[in-house]
Length: 323
Ligand code: PBG
Image 1: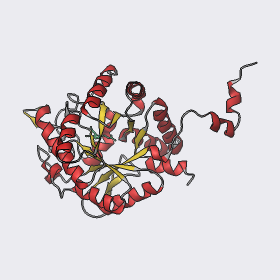
Image 2 (image 1 turned 120 degrees about the vertical axis):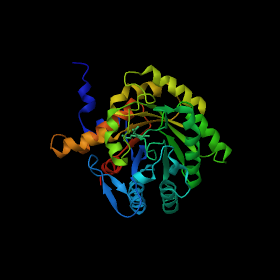
Image 3 (image 1 turned 90 degrees about the vertical axis):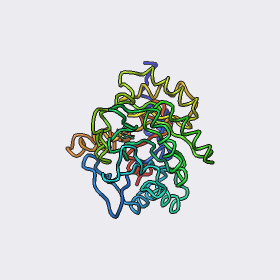
Image 4 (image 1 turned 120 degrees about the horizontal axis):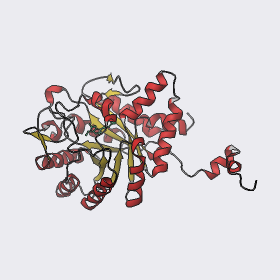
């Protein structure tokens, strides 16, 4: 036989040399949940993750940074009594999230801090936008998102990350940031975010499931890929600095399509349900968590993602560094 593909797989050194896609800790963003008070509250469906007090958040972020993970993405877990229909806590300068951002920036100035822009952690309706007469009102929501982003920028966020899927929000946020003097704060847009059942554990973590209805009037239909390119074009025109596809593995085709249609950095979010599946199978002895995590992340890179949001960021960085 003249042609033997196996020759390029024969030894570890050859496999290293011919490998097309690599994963490094600096590809990773670690999502973290923050809560008031002391200590931490475990999240049953996300073993290894908990709602962290601000001091524990700093501790965990320091661990990630020490392993070469450059960024964290923050989500606040608010007490029910602080939630209201317009998510008014989200613009308070001394709210939980701004205090968490300030603590991280003080203790770990070189860490990149991303903050989530959407109403759901703050909303008594559990929706990403304002609910008016049973509908999610797009245009009433935009100024609230813009004000939230400015409050986060004031606290020191490096990039704000709108995950709400309201039309026009990237532009509204960009304008508000610029007007407030935050021209250097970036926007990581959850550009192609699908109405996915894989967000279940995240909603448990924040107790943020919609109180009525679902998110299908704003998040994308899982059957649609062409529509992702439409969202991409809009977010680019409105000033997004990074674009994201979410969830991850079930949407590799979308990651690839977005990669081929933009020169912006593309992120993919290996979401809470994807993480929970690996942990649950591993807890049963059915899968090897570490091997499956690394394979999942590599697949997202291969599909074209530059930046990977993963709850396994610390585990992956440890594995990559042989620790
Ligand atoms: C909501 C938001 C969600 C996630 C990030 N931001 C859930 C949702 O849309 O209900 C999900 C992340 C995950 O599942 O890991 N703005």
